[in-house]
Image 1: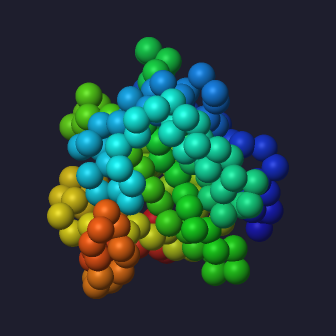
Image 2: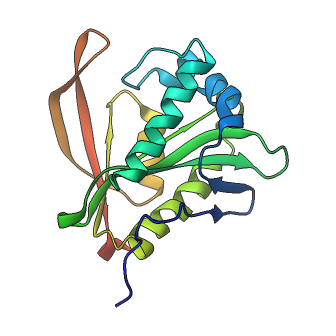
Length: 185
């Protein structure tokens, strides 16, 4: 068996239409455009970004989880335009259990075009093969129908409902728990 990904150098992934790469300082305006959109952050635990500093803080968090080896977040760069149109990656990695949670977001201009399906396949493959994960989880608000459709398309199964699992934006929210196992491949 090969050695699992060591978190020593940020991996670059390529799909037909996108480069998946580490965040760079010049991505801040694109990250601001992404997370300042209310429809993008509707089901996220924060309010819309207002400044480039907000975007820089987010990108610093991406660097932090990589350093801590608890996750990695790729910028989804459109090959044609060079613009960052979303992010995708892993968080809450538990090395002892070979498990991580997938997260993703996409600018509304790119919704409905198969972007996240294309990107998530590459990210899931990296997780199962390179990181040697056994289980990849996703936690989604039950009202986030688009995300749930994507998870079903990717072969995830719903495991259950975490009732009032998190306190976000002044209220308790339920989270539907989905997972995909390496043996599901």
